[in-house]
Image (cartoon, rainbow, N blue to C red; front, side, top):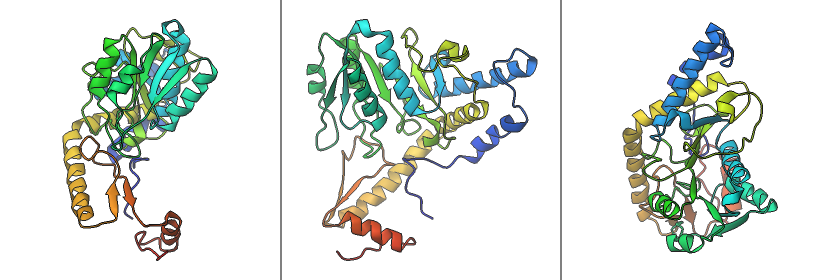
Length: 322
């Protein structure tokens, strides 16, 4: 099988799986317990936190484990405005954000938050002048994703971070697709909050993290025990946290090799497309991830394409004539 859906989810790496397995049935102890085995487990979790921090050049104390990017997004946006409402009730985001952001913004609007949804141009990029002109005295937060999950287009995160810093605004960035594909330094980029999911980088599903810059306060989304410095209650999911840490370690270690492979595949696809007249690539050709390819095929009935794919599962490109 040729699998072409890695932007949606990836296979768990064997090294990641092997790292996780002992924590299901051998070292199954509760990391919040004060006995020796519990303390040893907590130490392993803190090492995983360190590995997560390193992939974005953050401090370990700035990493909060979550169930993944969707929870992190909800926590970041809801927690920010509940804790920092006095800073203003205006949020700036983009129309092409992931649904987790857009749906959360819709919810915030029911709570009195005004949201500006920026358009993108034909290349999938926001207008930075429009972004800056949208800032009002009530603006407190900018929420723009690093790389789009549908097109792979990368926004100019450096300049967005600079704009946020210039106007004393907080900047949240959904980096779920970008982690492991590009080098990220949250301090250099002036990012205050950032999220990701392990299953996008050959880690397990159901685990991710939210980076929150030291000093920025959020109201917890999940209340309970004192885990995560009272930021997220609930028993530590040790096996998945270990898997997340290992996935981050491997993604960081092989990031240059990964980028090279993706670039080679991208160039091969480009050469093929240049020979055709009815296939176009959606999104900017240079400011992008090279592992996501969004194609527009002219004169093709999508329903016919899907029907043909189902009827001939061994060759999804065997098309009927409409």
